[in-house]
Length: 421
Image 1 (tube, rainbow, N blue to C red):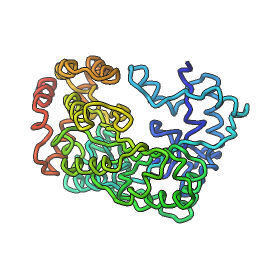
Image 2 (spheres, rainbow, N blue to C red):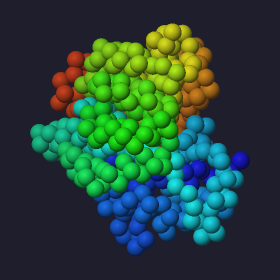
Image 3 (cartoon, one colour):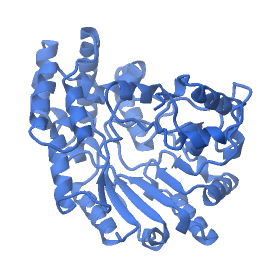
């Protein structure tokens, strides 16, 4: 099996929350236009414009030749650490056959992930301005009170917050009628597997307009649609369209049980999440599925076994075609959210707790990662100090019912011991 090939440059379209086009959701590189200066943007370019651009053809040629691609470094790194990545080699031989020597791919993609901007009602701990305008607004507001803290956050970058310079700005690339209709048309004609994310898609009118458009074109029946949602909002309009799809799936972004997920996905409410899950369960039929997708991170890894147990109980005791679980949302950035930065003593204690419960191989891989030291002593000190400073200030501003220190007292003690505070 090839260690570099992936089907994404051959069969996948991805639009980032700011409208920029990339290989997939894992890469951080925006695709450049042929002048190598501008970037492909859904506001200015169609999917066809970028699909056989110079950069896309170069990527395909390199993959076929077995050369690593800069855009794919995150997947390579995850695989080296024993974690599951999004890289897929399925259909490799057929993709290569349909690719010309210059890298031109002669067919349209049939899979797509579309991120409908950054309009969101939550300010999740691991999130940033790029994916939640509310998170950006809050960061800006804290900075108005505490300019030194904001300057520090900007300097820290991916350590504490995946920084952008447009705090509080709403990314709404899909609002133009021309842009919207071009995108809807492409999806209706070509895409059979679609993932829709925001922000929070259920808050965005164009999300529902997309369903209405495909319904009018008679193409809903050909589509497998995944909706990634924080479960804080539902809409009865979905009861009209979901049953018409070939398949539909809810990826439920729930990061803990009870007050833990309320803290991480602030200011969500546990009872609202449970009610939303029931909403989707009530319309489940043979074509529907609800999959739990926790963002595994430092703030919930000690509760990972409890999350799995709760979910299995909610599903009736087992996973099946109607109920699933995915580990693909492990938080790698910001670095203070990755469990690897915690003190070794605390990580090993959590690993022992999790080891008492058996689930699947991905669960075991996460436990094994906890046992591995991944940073230099200096980097551990930097990240642990940053974790405390960032979360203490954010918790103070929010006035949360329970701070991270109260929710994870043993982590607080371990950090203070590690830093000799």
